[in-house]
Image 1 (cartoon, rainbow, N blue to C red):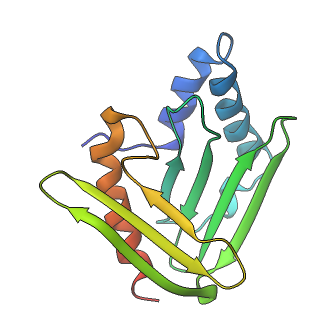
Image 2 (image 1 turned 180 degrees about the horizontal axis):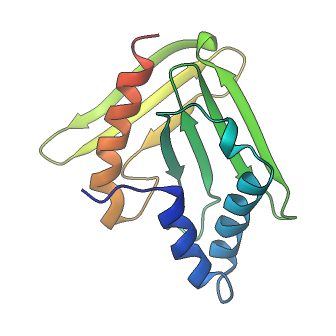
Amino acid sequence: MSEMTLEKLKGWSSTERYSNGYYRKVYNLIETLSESGILQTLDKGHVFYPQNIFLEEEDVEFLFISERYISICNIDEQGDVHVQTLSLKEINKVELLKLNPEKRTAELIVYINNEEPIILSNEKDTNEHWGRKFYDLILEIYSVLKVK
């Protein structure tokens, strides 16, 4: 299985960023996270989930999930990057829905104290090509979060 990594995503967005505003935002988000040192502060062994990737009509959001926290990173229309880090201790409930191994579909809802729930869906968060790979990512994230 071809794994989605920041390096691969940086390469793809780098080639498209001059002609496409969406990929320019993706590239700038990666560059800002790298240059600011935020990527170096992430726990080793985190799961990387690029929500809304390859969906040019949606805003991209990067989630980094570890055994201690969830970091959510996005970039606004002005090019400013926003990073929110939530402790896993703040999680009320985790639901795995629409799980169908035959169709390879899954949806994960993470309920966090005083926050909007985080909803991950391999059918809605990427294009058709990557949907099957995001199924595996969602199951991996679920296995990290369910032990908390």
